[in-house]
Length: 457
Image 1 (spheres, rainbow, N blue to C red):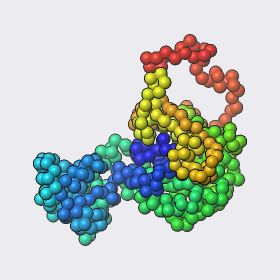
Image 2 (cartoon, rainbow, N blue to C red):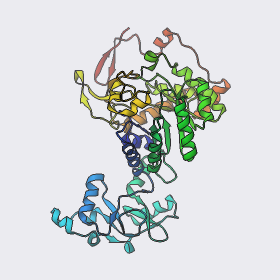
Image 3 (cartoon, one colour):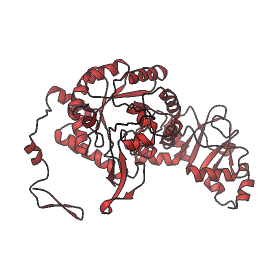
Image 4 (cartoon, rainbow, N blue to C red):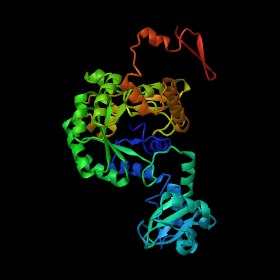
């Protein structure tokens, strides 16, 4: 969703062991690919595409890199690109005290302030990440250029990435040490070019985004991606039945996304009369997918931490969250003050009129042509109350699931699935009265922080 996940959200999700799926509702495919690159450059390992300076650059060029991208140093190569011969390195201590007059900056060659490559501590491309990290620590340097046998720059390792590795031990990253990130694509023919750009940018997972996952459009795109980019993991969907699941798995899907009309801002079930209760859909599809060795994602209906535990117990390998993460600091969009002085952010379904009118991508997802006079909404636009930073909220969700597993008596998702399959963990239908009994009840008020919240008896 374009009000939930762009690079900021994807980065924090990966740091805590998850993965963010960059939405596809950008004006151009290049914009979406740029968000993938932002995640890949914020990583715990080798920076494969660092911003470089050419030998004829100036100190002003370095200051522009710092101003635009926030980097305090850059390698200097023959032609200013990765893959050419490394001739030096510039860090903030080399240019911080240069005259701030722009004319002086423009006229100061980078060669006069850089440290020559012959004086640098260099890493080798043949070294492992661990070996390169030891070099950083041993020599107490901020950046370690990685070169090949010909002295050509191939990557960069930064001390700040070591600090991230220490602070986020459960972060999810690829074999190069880059944070994992995924991207959504629609089922139209134009998506083939988008897929090419996303793969080049380094996307680890692609999610085919469709309101009906078993359409012929999805099958054709799924087969194309698996044939053209077999190294990319591909999640297909959305589906709610075993028959739909079989169609996608037979076509080569590596994972399935389950859910139709169950999200908090989705009205597909109401307007289109199509969909299925989410718990039933997850349970039935997951049981079949397990026989084929394919994991499933429970997408929609995750209202709080307890719903994550329920989805995992029903057979999901993971959950996709939209509304639960909307209005966090890392979600796209600006905060504003709503009625009653509440700080809120905008949250909308990709099938809402708001989203479809802004970008043609959403129209494609719901089979609506840009020229159509009549558009049928399958989602709504709303606002969500400020949830604060994901750096506080995600640890709460993780700890909540851990407590849920502790109460159930399992140590892992795999053990949960096994014991449900063996009948040792069972589900029970709860009457409306039982559900009422399981919540807060029979009180005059609840103290929530410094506020008193009235509760109906």
